[in-house]
Image (cartoon, rainbow over all chains, first blue to last red; front, side):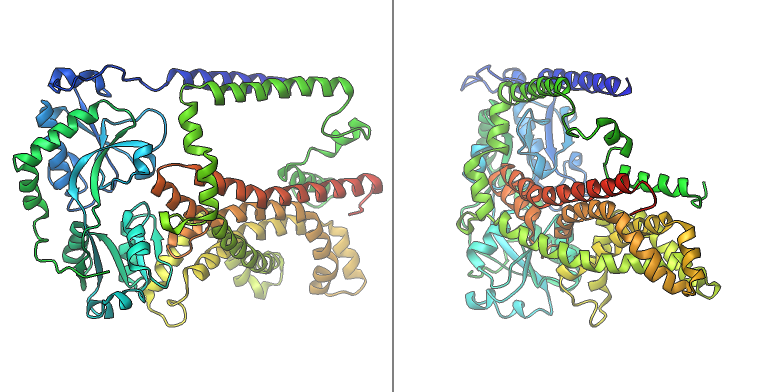
Amino acid sequence: MRKSVVLVVLALLAVGLAARGSGAAPVSTTTVAGAASCSYGAVQPDLLKKGVLTVATDSPAYDPWFVNNTPSNGKGYESAVAYAVAKDLGFSKSHVKWTVEPFDASFAPGPKSFDFDINEISYTSERATVVAFSVSYYDVQQALVSLKASPIVKHHSPAELRTYVYGDQIGSTSLAFINDELRPIHQPSVFNTLNDAKSALQDDRIQALVADTPTAQYISSSEIPHSVLVGQFPSTGEHYGLLFAKGDKLVGCVDKALDKLKANGTLAKLQRQWLDIYTSVPTIKP
Amino acid sequence: MPLRGSREGAYLDEQILLAAGAPPPGAFAAGGGGSRLFGGRRAAAVSTVSTVVFLGVVVVLFVFAPGAAAVRHTFFNPQQMWQAFRGDPSKGLYSVGKGLILNVEMFLIAEVLILFCALVIAVLRQLRNPVLFPFRMLAVIYTDVFRGVPLIIVIFAIGFGAPALYIRGISTQSDFVYGIAALVLSYSAYVAEVYRAGINSVHQSQVAAARSLGLSQWKSLRYVVLPQAVRTVIPPLLNDFISLQKDTALVSTLGAVIEANRAAQIDSSTLFVYSSYTVAALLFLCLTIPLARFTDHLIARDVGRRMAGGGAIR
C-alpha cells in the first residue's frame, strides 16, 4: 500500500517536471531585426525582458575589467563597454540590469538568462558553433606574471620558457596558449578560479601564471606583493567578444554599436581610461 | 537502546544491511526462493509494462523536447565524446581516459590507508582502559570534526594551507599527495564509524566467552570481535569506497592533478560543449558499477548464510 502511494507521488512529480520542462521551452526570436533598424524600439522583441538590457558576468568580476566586484558601478573596462553599448541602443543606465552567469553555464543549451554576457570570453571558431559572439571589443595579448625572485624574470628565452611550471584558471584560453606556444616540459596546473592560481603563485606551487595583459598587470601591480609582469607575448589574433545565445538577433545591432564605438574612438578612450598602464610592457617571444 | 541483547544486535546488523541498500531478510523469505528481482509471472508482466512505459516517456522527452537537438549536440555528441576520451593536444583537449588513471591511483592508495587508519580509530574508541581516555577523546573529536567538514574544504585546507606553511618535508609535497591526505583524513572518520557499528554488532556474550577462556581484553578484541565485526561491515565499507572513487575528482581543485573530471572541464570550456562530462560520467560508472554488483553479491551471500544457519552464524 505504502509502496504504491510512493509510486503515485513519483509519477505525479515526473509529470509535473515534464510539464514545467515544456513550459520553459526556448523563447524563439523569429522576428527579423531589419538591417537598418537598431533603434530602441526595434530591438525590444529580441530582449529577454522588454525595456531592460540584461547583461551577465561571472562572480567574482575581476579587476581591471570591473571594479570592486560591482558590475553596475560603470567602472572598469567591461562595465564601461556594456554601458556604452546600452547607451548606443537607447537604454538609460538604470535600464541596464546585471546578472551573475558562471562561465561554465554561459554556454549551456537552452534559454539564456541574459541578453549578452561580458566576461573576458575569447572568440574561437569551435565555441562559435555553440554560441554567438559579437565583434571584438578588446584584442587580447597574453602576459606572464611571476614572483620577483623567480629566475624566469631574467631567463625567458624560448628554450628556457619550456622549463618552468605554469598555472592558469580553467576555461581560459591562456591554458591553450601555454600548451601551444610555450610547450612546457611540466604539465601546467589548472585551477578553478584565477584567485586559486594567484594563491598557488604566492606559495611557490607554480612559478608563473599566464593571463591577458590587463589582468596580469593588475595582479602584479596591485594584488600579489613581490610579483612582477615579466612581459607580454605577441598577439595571436585573439580577441574578446560579447557572448549571445546561438541565433540571437540582437548580435547584429550590438555589432553595429561596437563598430560605431570603435570608429568614433570611444573604445580606445575607455581602454586608455581603464586599461592604460600597459603601453610600456615589454614583449617577449614564446 | 542499549546494544546488548541478541535481538538488538541482530537489529543493528539489519540496519547496516538496510543502509547498504539491501531489502530486509523477510522480503526474500516471502519470495519463497523465486527470482528476487522479478517475482512471479504476473509481477513480471506488470514490471515489463511499467518498464516499457517508463522508457517510452524518457525517450519521448529526450527525442521530442523542443531543445532535444541542442541537448544531444551538447551532451551526447559521439565525435566530441571520442575526442574528449582520447584528448587532442592540437585542439587544446585533454584526455579524460588518461585522467581516469589518476583517479584510480588516488583511490587505491587512499583506500588502503583509510582501511588501516579507520580501524585504529574505531579500536581506540572501543578501548575501556582509563589510561587511554585522552586517545578515546581524540578519536571522538576526530570523527566528529572530519565527518562534519565538507571534503572539498579539507582538500583546500591541506592543499593550499600546507605549502603556505613553508615547513620542510610537508610544504613541498605534490598536490597528488595533499589530495590523498585529505581523502584519508575525511574518509577515515566515516569508515571508523562503520567499523564501530560492526564491533558493536558482535554479541557481548562472545567477549564474555573469550575472556572466560583467559584471553586478554586486547586478544579477545583481536581474535574474536574484530574478525566478526569486519565481515559484517564489508558491504557498507564497499559502499563508502564507491563514494570515495567519485570523490577523488575533487582533488583536481588543487590544480596540478588533471584527473578525469578536470580534463572534462578543460575540454568542455574549450569547445563549449558538455560531451566530455558525459564521457567522465560513463568512465566513473565503469569503475563503480562492478563494485556495486560485488557489494550486492556479498550482501546476498551474507543473507544466505544467516537464513541457512538460523542462529548466530555469520
